[in-house]
Image 1 (cartoon, rainbow, N blue to C red):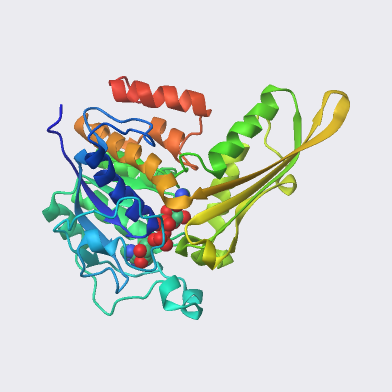
Image 2 (cartoon, rainbow, N blue to C red):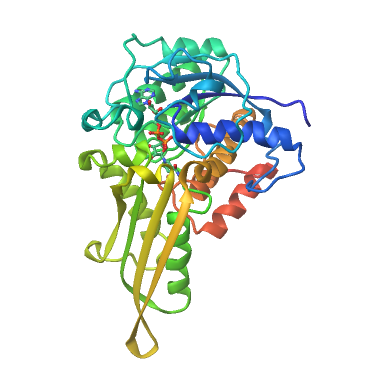
Length: 366
Ligand SMILES: NC(=O)c1ccc[n+]([C@@H]2O[C@H](COP(=O)([O-])OP(=O)(O)OC[C@H]3O[C@@H](n4cnc5c(N)ncnc54)[C@H](O)[C@@H]3O)[C@@H](O)[C@H]2O)c1
């Protein structure tokens, strides 16, 4: 142990990538002294700092052509800087194909708040992945980038890389894509990352609590807003379809009996620029107690959105590498169920956690 390395490529160097990469260096500097914020300090011999970034793709003119160590702090990224000492990595951010990655409504917003597409042609993504030796590709494209996600998933397949899909274009949970990864002998984890302690996991735990205590859940909503580009992008309602499915199913699947669709409303709701990467979530749950007597619960959650996803991504990436080492291809059911909102198969959270630990110990994945 100790000399293992994992070669990672990142697609979309936005706020989530910024937090994740800061995390590699933050935990390295802590040298095992501070493991706060990690669900698994060690996964099969891989610690957070054993992840080496070897390739990165973006389309923003303030990021493309820069070293990753600089690009992660370029606008419109606005997440907390908890480790400003990230060094230059010697890896240049390369231009990817734009496809449907950039929503047109963004053009109406100030430059420092939105994406600005670089006037460059795209590189050969598959070739870069191969030549860089990337083993795992993590996808952080904006919600609604259907074509772009499929493009990068295909490039990962052809380059022989595992794929970790942190957003809600369905790949691991899409049968045809899952089969392609299975046939290529490559692991895929997805889809749409949960936060470490965010709206989805909190809502799931509470919904499960209602079920366990015999309280009928009649109505619920979960509304979310924030000031990062993820929330700005999601103002375009037609890009939101799969995000709403993913977030709603994550809660529905934790109930004994799913709720009628009219009684459950879950989704991103607005964009408040000054909040930056601070996400606010309000949850209301209305139920009936003993004797059919009504009750309600209201909750406000305030979190820095992107480090919150980093705490999950860091496990997904290392599990993907373990699966590669063990020759396991296709969807990884355990880690997907534990840390993704829309996995191929949903499991209760405590069971998913046990399955992940069993997978890490080397027990059968399926
Ligand atoms: N807690 C969380 O933050 C969280 C949780 C679940 C899911 N997600 C999802 O993860 C994804 C990333 O979130 P984020 O906050 O980092 O978003 P972001 O808007 O900060 O970053 C997206 C990045 O993708 C780049 N991009 C756009 N089109 C591209 C293309 N065609 N090729 C390469 N790069 C392209 C943009 O320039 C930007 O740097 C989003 O889809 C989000 O919904 C985030």
